[in-house]
Length: 430
Image 1 (cartoon, rainbow, N blue to C red):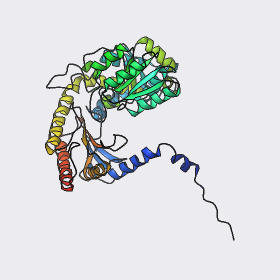
Image 2 (cartoon, rainbow, N blue to C red):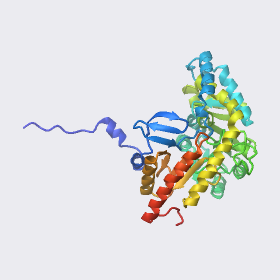
Image 3 (tube, helix red, strand yellow):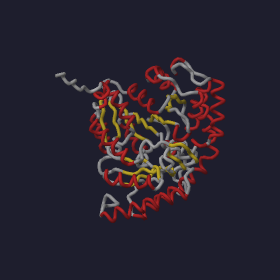
Image 4 (cartoon, rainbow, N blue to C red):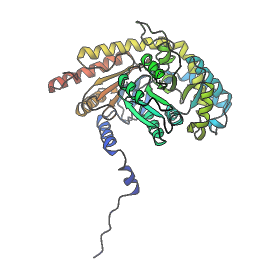
């Protein structure tokens, strides 16, 4: 009798079952069940989408808050002109040399923010991966806000592999942070890593208290303001709590860049593919030498820099008017959700509006209902949120409409009735 062949697992299968399977596998399965995952779109008109199945969706999953992504006529022309002049791609690392458009845009965004100079990376993720391990070496310490963006954690892990200590604290717990700083005050360099605007709640980093604490213990605050750039800005008022001009969270607080290293991506605010750090000339020279993505990775394309150059001008023309529209839409949405009895995790009226679900089952049921009702948003299960804090994240832009907000509220009202009927809470304190 012929001997049966022994079944073997392919090399690919073996790799794909390794790693963080206890966290990521449930996340992927939940996202697939929710329908709010890997949605493939065949047409876009403002914030109305049509997926490949012909299903019409109101888009509440975009982070292009002032809708620069849809200013195609102006920005496409600028990107094309830059491409015609400097080529599709430079073909060399930033460290080796650059073109005049890069120099111009680095200086222009620095002026916009009130800094000395800037250095561009292909993305803000690569900015973190380049900068944090360059600044924190053996004998140094990184103090990471647990709610900071995952890419900062990845960069901090790289620094830890080089010998830096990696310590964490809960968002906003400055007492705990001070305890950690005090216990590590003799370390040579200390880097505190935070988000400017937190991507799940729309909360702002408490820079007015954080920076003096950093100064007391001779630490540097690394702040990633990817959501705040081009949206929050200087001189906020009661009528316009976001502030004006869109020149970032530091200017929103009326602060200087002393004791800060300001980093951001420009895709959300300016519809361009790049990230940057606001730097002094000495810091720029240091990063060009030691931040690996500047040496081993291609820089942003001339097209992206041309788009950004034009978007900086356009933002000053239209930004404040569009922010006012976003504020009115957010006020309508947040007040409507709270009137229905939902717990909304938002204290700033920033256009990140997360609605508490509290467990995976409720999250999936609500996500599927919203998709059926023609609503596209971000479903946030564990581990993107802590257990018990699972949420439905709505993002609002200036190209959303009142009619879409009302459509969204009507869908949430149906969810409310289902939850009440099933005897499940709408609020974590119930």
